[in-house]
Length: 111
Length: 116
Image (cartoon, rainbow over all chains, first blue to last red; front, top):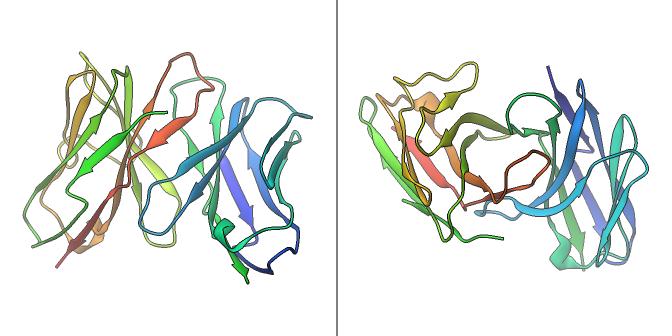
């Protein structure tokens, strides 16, 4: 069974203090790994898809990377508006379009 | 992307009653999904709803408890039947804009359901 573990559960950073969020996964065959951002009271907002080890995607202050066992979401010089819960999900190679989610990292950026 | 609207956004219900949640998309999509997000837990897929066929349920979820309709390519409903406090959760609708796997899903803002 697919498993996704995210760490840390919560992270508080000063504005401008860069860091990384981790997503470890176990899947029989990876079709795609997805990063989402979720604000309170909202649904998850799609950020990135990664398909194969070594792949990287960037968007503003965020960069996602992928290895065969884990993905990192690097946040460079974060701003308070980057505060949110970041979710990681995997889709396996066979079967339906199901996404298996981790429990997320709650990121707080302090001005 | 797509605009996905869910109704109601929240509700408080009595145990033993049923509630139907609606999901409307602003474009035609083949695949729609229903997820549950319980407090402190990850999103869990309840079922996949394809237009013109029966919904496919994940392990632990049954049609009698969570009947789903998919009458056309822009609309779906999820009913939570005979509710108990354990059904208090956020229910989210998502869509895949294309098929073939490896495509992201886009989510509505969810329905926050509390059962008294």
